[in-house]
Image (tube, rainbow, N blue to C red; front, side, top):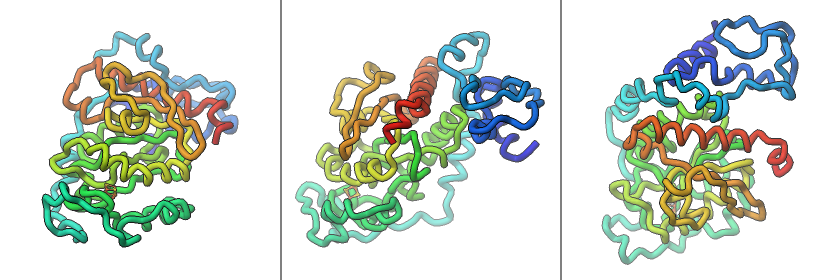
Length: 323
Ligand code: SF4
């Protein structure tokens, strides 16, 4: 068995989803008929070679999951996440904070954005960026809001530049601030597992945050900070053109959809966000960090159903024409 198939098998076993989720290899094969029948005994895909895009029935749906109440295991397991967390933060040396124009910590109350266009890029400079790499290079020294005072690393976002699913979280936490990557640490490991359960990899989607710098003590970003930073996320969305966006937690729901109702009441209900002339389906769900705090089968089941809903819409032909 190849390494990728083995990893897929282990992931599904860990999640208690063996036989329910499609192999990543099968996703690659959707566009063409298989040359010979599938013989993998783990697979529940048709063994007659009829696995084509039109006939594909293999993806698990929420009702499939509910139709298997005999499974004692919830959809997401964190059995190996604590180990990953340890390895991800045990750095030999803590990185130093970036030097900012204002080196006085606690100067947030009388913050004034710098005039330097490298530290506070004008909108035109952002609009002129034609790739994510260009945009990252243009904004990574941003000091437009006081969150730059406490950051170790700017966290741009990562993933497929043409991803159909885009996840948007609140902002970097401690691990993300250290590594300069979104959703690492325990919450990130859980998000990876959710994505794997959908039959995808992290590199198949795009992951970003409302704010690119870590708020002190992981507090919720102030609306002024979020609104200052959102123009970067908007440009990312404009370049990526995702078919759907999944909002993780209350902050993207508030800042992107303008909804302040509690996430528990509105998760799983489609909204629309208008960015650069496109109306993009937006589905709010729980933040992985919340799932870790409320680690019940019900919460995990809710997120799992939301993600399947988002994937189904991302794959629908209607959304393909919006690209
Ligand atoms: S949070 Fe955004 S706007 Fe504020 S300093 Fe960081 S990149 Fe700039």
